[in-house]
Figure (cartoon, rainbow, N blue to C red):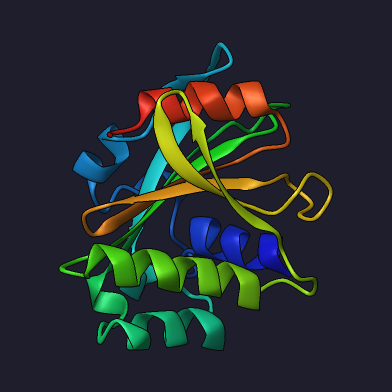
Length: 171
């Protein structure tokens, strides 16, 4: 279920929209790495109002911040190949950083069928929260942190790729 929520938010487009139309915020995309593990990544972004998915947990997350889909942007950097990692951002315009990050963690947990472990770690000099132990999430643990009104996160089973990605994100 967690992978379904994240995938739906990354890839949901209105009917008939082309993938090359997923560039709602080039500045947000530019904050994400262009390469990871020697692989060139596809960088995209979408406005919350362009997401065609309906998800009560996600909408509740925004409501808890007194925000709506018009305030939300999602950025993603991924490979169509065999790279087992994706780098993403959830930006909620004007959101309080602490409330945003708490809501993000709660949203990820609420989207999972199992209780996810949560721990604080330092990778590439960045203090991050790891959500999920290896094996708890189909696509690997999520390494996340908030910077202002944006949550940046990496999902991968490969800790070295997580370190590399986090080292390329804003601090």
